[in-house]
Length: 210
Ligand code: PRP
Ligand code: URA
Image (cartoon, rainbow, N blue to C red; front, side, top):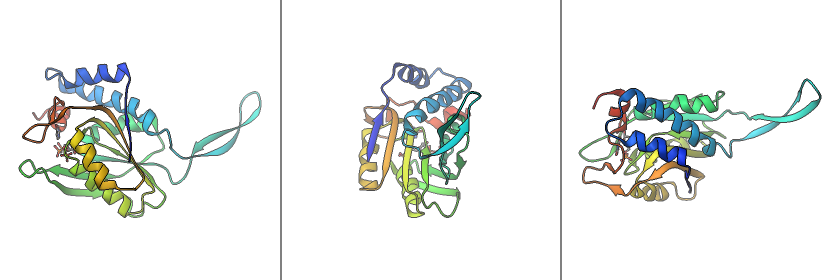
């Protein structure tokens, strides 16, 4: 597993506003979108491209285009949906598959309630979107599913991660091709399995249900 922790003042600044409990939902949603776009730049560093011949107004030249099969973005519903527009803005040709997982707040175990993805993911580069990596249960279940269906490599983009979740992902992915791109690594989990200091319940803050 490779891990990249963003080290950029603009990202830390935006995360600070996101964490602030007085930040209202509309601003929270806007910041999530902006942060994803910034993190996606790093997350797509290894996106596969192929050469293409074009003509500029001045001369013929060779550039690159994103290869087929196209990258697949996989937001984990619900909170991950708030990250989709920001990713698609950077990679408009991406395809999108959806997975719905809710963490059982008593056991902290992930419960999958929806899946709508291409059946065959052979040779796919997948980009999983979820703002929070807490125990790692939800992300590990998603990444397992993608690899079991043929994904070639998987990159997860998370805004905030706990060290416990990062460790759990290391164990879960073993030697498979997995990269984690995060905006910040926080101190740890509290007794309710929430990231601390974190930003609270990302889904509730995105959709105003707190
Ligand atoms: C949150 C978050 C992750 C998960 C992280 O979703 O968006 O999917 O918790 O926790 P874990 O690492 O311990 O699995 P939640 O279950 O609250 O569902 P929601 O997105 O529908 O709000
Ligand atoms: N899910 C969240 O939304 N926030 C946390 O801190 C942990 C899990």
